[in-house]
Length: 364
Image (tube, rainbow, N blue to C red; front, top):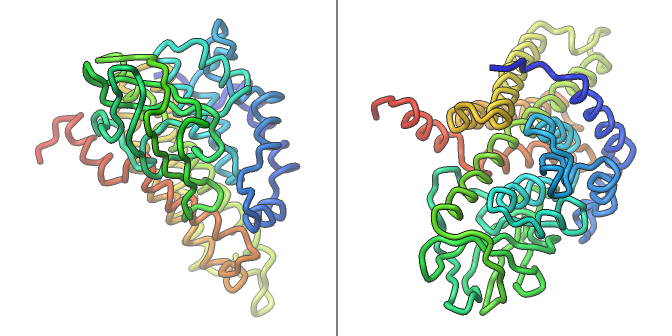
């Protein structure tokens, strides 16, 4: 195992992303945006993609990327979790780009890595690693796609759709221009990450992988997504704890800060312990993805552990903020919704625990 502490490069990347998000995606801007139909902040996304280089962070340099590892991607995900910024990072950078890199689709990878296009992986957001190859979309002998996929993350702003389909000769991975599909945005529980149903009717498609290569590319993308999601959940939990401690220090009852009450101090201490565990699990998953060591086990551990921690931390934040925490004007509800949505995304904690038991040969 390598050093799980953040490197100087990772801390510099964190500072750049955090400063940008603090300036462009603060609580007031976030709350104002969710009241509009626009949803995503594509101007912020272009800045992240082009100026910070997030779009091609883990893409090899020969494909137009920066050649970083999963550890750097995880740092960005952690900061995006701290801000719940409405940008298509998970769908485009983490899922779609990873699938295309694994499939060797160089031309499409360049479009995504250089920020010229946004991608989405056309599988339900709840799809867990190890779930098998989907068959809701079929490919004809001429290479056109027909079928429907529900609850696809970031599809409503995607230019390219990476579509697993049942091809004439078995599993296959295709790329479809979003303009050739019907994308219907749904009312999402998480107001900062939209999902949509995607339908295809003889849609022109480009085959990028088939057979075992297609199945491996999809599985790698789902594993990478679940592992990186653990860092996002860590960021969500960290925001909840930091904001709650700050609020309780400034809130007075009976002439003393509420945060000084012993029962509340115990609850905050428990949250801090949970956050330390979440960060350790997320860093281990990111390092495993970067080194290729025990990846399925590290990802399963991180997701089984971090999803409940993020939910608990945000629930405590709302309760310990008192009346203001229950209002629409405070951002705490957005973090709770992100935490609950993330708990279902890319596999529930129960699914990851069951998979972990298989991976380490625990009896049923």
